[in-house]
Length: 117
Image (cartoon, rainbow, N blue to C red; front, side, top):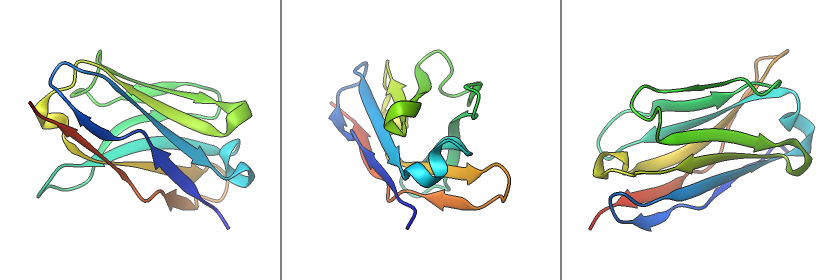
């Protein structure tokens, strides 16, 4: 059974930092493009960042220069380092995997990030 398990969310003050982690099943990690999405309160889920199988990355304009996606293949883990957090970054953050060859998509259960004084 494929699993994606996020961790690292919490409450942080504006300007602070958090690092999210997503551990994926070993059966899919090396064959998947990995993503972070987020869903702010009352809004639709939106793209945050992605990292390909060879390590190429892309970030949404709203987080460029503040957030960084990375991965550790030995740990089947993708990270999202979030710096200079703003209240508008408050959201549930989701990890997503897309198998390159078959196109199967998997989602994690989400982790809450709240940026507030």
